[in-house]
Image 1 (tube, one colour):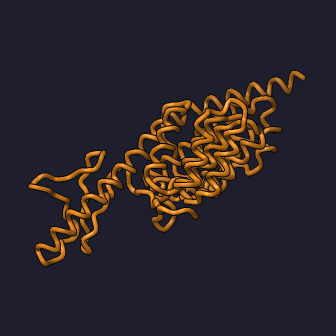
Image 2 (tube, rainbow, N blue to C red):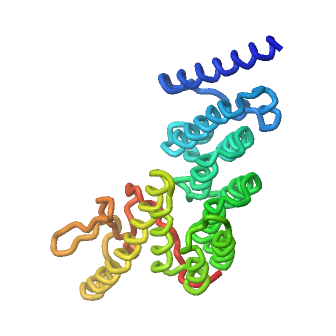
Image 3 (cartoon, rainbow, N blue to C red):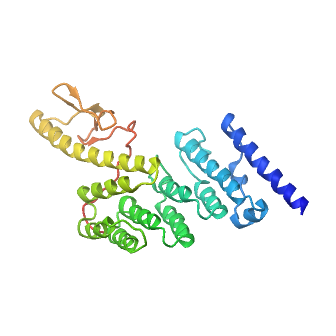
Length: 294
């Protein structure tokens, strides 16, 4: 018995030491593909009662992996930046070690669903992660809504999204606006008005600053899409009056004033005369929002 306790204490101390080391000094280059165990259940047995602490370690590793790849500091062989090969395995390990790790499910799903270059571009894995959370907490209406948002925002499958919103509306403690959201999604799925209403609702119901920030970013993206439509009309009229296509790569100017997106980065015009968001904008890439039901 004393041996088991000693092993547990040593593992906990080692985990805390590793956390401190990673916070204070960068990790050396190494072969990440061989670093981690692939079986969360085996790891739970190995941690002997310290699964929650181990989950924290793997969650921090998931964030570190995501951040490094997103910033291009840990490019994959051949120079392919922003590849996230370990993101889902790390999130899967984290949530197996601690099946009620709410932040790992909700943040992790956004990391996975966001398109390249901002995220992994894997909404299918985002849904798989959230469904795993639902198997542990079937009445967690927030996970059900999150699955609906993945279908809505990234997969543009509005019928499926409406079904998930409706399912969430019948769960205990679900907010009253979910029923209306399901109906709106089914009737108007894909238009920016309904998208804006949904993100505003998510922002108001978010239980942490990070999710509120994600909702704010999506609302700014919708604002940018509206502005691009207006600017496109102005550019088209100018090109018709000038009788020549615009020069590619120039910023959009009206009466000598450079027009910027909600983050302050100038809009640009390509060689075909199409207005688009500058790639340096934190809102890049913008979502493709078709205005019809899938």
